[in-house]
Length: 93
Image (cartoon, rainbow, N blue to C red; front, side, top):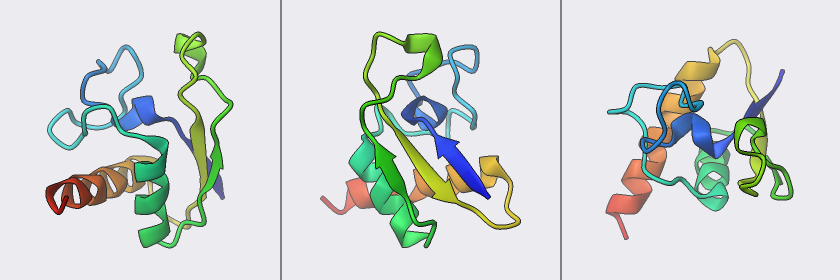
């Protein structure tokens, strides 16, 4: 099943009302498309990047989105796993 992941979903600087889908403690600040794509690749989710798209609520921001294939896992679990990988990638820089 294909699932769309907008950076807003895991951005700790956004509120739930603004579109964040996971717990603020699990989220990362200002996630980049490349980071999300890299994390999704590590999880074998076959990410496809569409960098010309804008999150509907913030249509003026050209944030882009990632489309991933997920099997039998909740969307929130995938988002939390991607966020954790981004956190670990950032620590190793």
